[in-house]
Length: 97
View 1 (tube, rainbow, N blue to C red):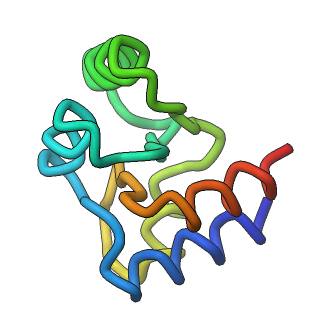
View 2 (cartoon, rainbow, N blue to C red; view 1 turned 45 degrees about the vertical axis):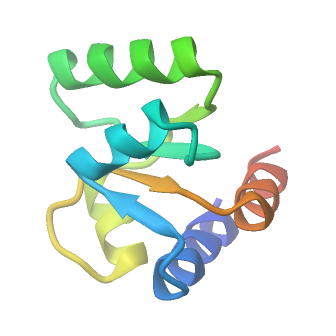
View 3 (spheres, rainbow, N blue to C red; view 1 turned 90 degrees about the vertical axis):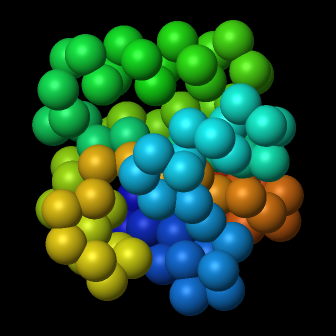
């Protein structure tokens, strides 16, 4: 699992991600390829993000806590992040299998 978080960190450093509310804009505009949602996010946030991802056909990964996601990208208190590059998304999804 840590390999997927390492790839997420690389995607963030390559500026191929959207964080927070801009993540939802990336999903609805079909720019996001995978979304990371913290498993300790509020139920309302989870429902909103999962519904949007399912309706747009974007995989949503909710296996990690906000602390794990935040430390992977080097920012504090992040609940969701989208990967907006097909190559990084493919590598991340392969790591999670």
